[in-house]
Image (cartoon, rainbow, N blue to C red; front, side, top):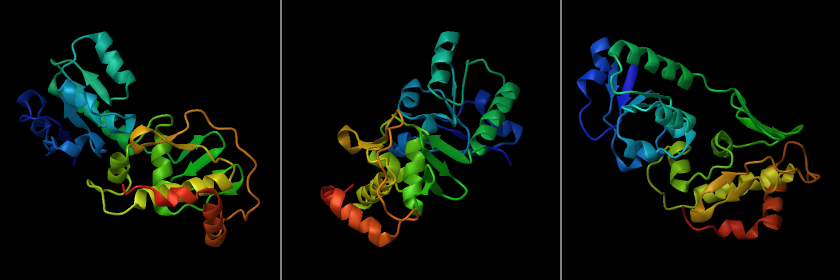
Length: 245
C-alpha cells in the first residue's frame, strides 16, 4: 500500500490529501528533530521555512515542496536536491504520479559509492581503498556511507546519531567520536589519513576532492584488531579524549 507523509504545522490541505486516492498518511511531522530525520516515504511540504531546515540532499530527497509558483524558484529548489517542486494548483492525479516517482527513487538505493580510490559496497557493508579491504564494523561503515553521500558537506553529530545510530538524543558516551577515531585510523592505514575532517561545531566532513593517497602502512590487508589498536595508539592519542557527543 502506497504511503506518503505530511510535514507541516497544520492539517494537510484537502487538495493535497492523497488518502482520497487510497494512500496511507504518515505525520504530520513537525518535531524539533525533523531537520535531522531521513524520511523513508515521500513527504509533502508547503512551508518554505521548514524546507530551509533540510540541510543535506539526503534530507531533501524525500520532500515534495508544493506552492512554488515561479519556475526559476522551482529550478533553484530542485537544484538543491528536493524530490520535486510543484506549483500550488497541482491536481491530485498529477500529484499522485509525481509522488510515485519520488517513492521509486527513494527505493532505488545505490549498491556502491565511490570517492577517489575509496569504494564502499552496501551489500558487503565494507570498503576498499585500491585493493586494500578496510574491514569496517557496521557503525563504521554506516558513518562512512553517510559521509560519502554528501562529500564536502559537514554533517553534525546530531544528524549522524539520528541517521546512523537511529537516536534522537545525545547519549552519555563518546561512542560517535570513538567510532570516527577508529574509522580514521583504518583509512590512514590504507593511505587516506585526512579524508575525514572535523568542521567547526564538531561536525564531520568527507573531503570534497578525493585526497591524494599517502603511502599505505605495511600492515595486513585485512587489518587485525591488535594492529589497528597499535596504530590508533601511535597516531591518534588525543582523539581518544574527544568530548562526549
